[in-house]
Image (cartoon, rainbow, N blue to C red):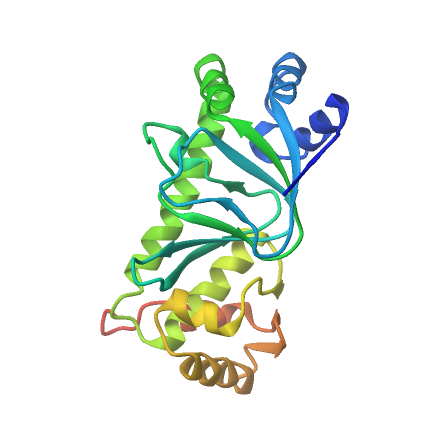
Length: 234
């Protein structure tokens, strides 16, 4: 980890690019920027440790961060991946004493570190900002509900749901997967070989193309159909 010497004006500019902060007045942005630090993390560096004190969170400006839970035996369960403009560790800022998961940089990451005190003060003083933040929490909750609802769902539907969700969140038909196929399979609760077969099937059906970690959606309607519950209720 490296702390960067960034002028307050530069931090304000970065904050303004974040949807969740766009409703803040200049005075509030300046106040927040004065309590924010810009940092860099390299691949595989840990941003937040599970059970560490929840005294700050990160705004991800560049790069990708995986959120994982590590079992006592050392096994790692991938929960989800945060991409640029995402928030890392934000949920633990309210009514939690520690972070519930570990956050690890997948590549070179540029972040803004914001203290718990600063974010709670903003929420208390800015009703509109509080509503924006609730929107972030709502989206995060929806993501986890979809993840839980995958139990009992066949592999092709799980993979299709994940790709469709990513496409809708990022508003693009061309995705670059931030994680390996092994990590993706782990997150979806299927074997790596099964994931490869499903992707091959989706390619054969001309729903998408796959080149390494790059996925291009060719037929969004078919992808939606594949991701939707079957008539049997699955």
